[in-house]
Image (cartoon, rainbow, N blue to C red; front, side):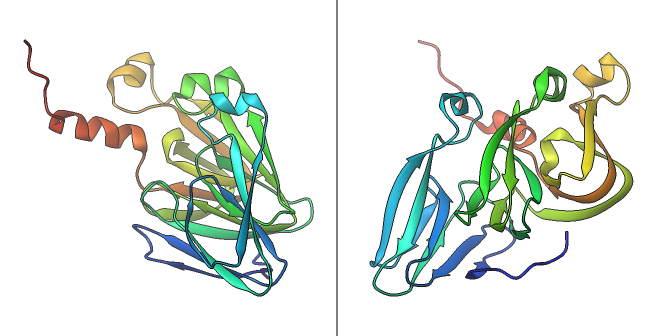
Length: 228
């Protein structure tokens, strides 16, 4: 994915552990932001909340709502803090260009970027133990997305295999299928999940940690309930 000029002045700070996005809006300019991600804003910014994606988004783990912020009577800045601790990246999508995000990776975008929930199907979603849905982002416009943990961008030319829990985003030029490595004993007892096998030419973003593994790691440290 070739770098394209951005329509916004922006900066990402506190990388890679607790990334914080600041975007400067010119008078009349609008940005779409994931619900609850706004941390700071100038007083001349006005917010409008919209529902997106319909009721099926109740099953995706995403918010049903998205907020639009518009600068009125002068420019202003908005600070955006994603929910999960990790890194953040930016992509400038060309007309018709598509980027797929895992369902919790979306942070913000231009109003011109179309967001659509994409059903992965039972084989690609349910049996992987991950989300059944992806977010299909179609340009033109700016797009910001985040990770749980650090972020690594990989240029795939041929084939590449990634644990489904480590996938953040990938370009639509990549084909993918979900499968296991080893037999069913390995699937249930190795501690590994299913893997996504990518093929073709395109860019893939992965995260250095996955939430399910982190949840298992902290489980022994939770205080035990005392029986009465």
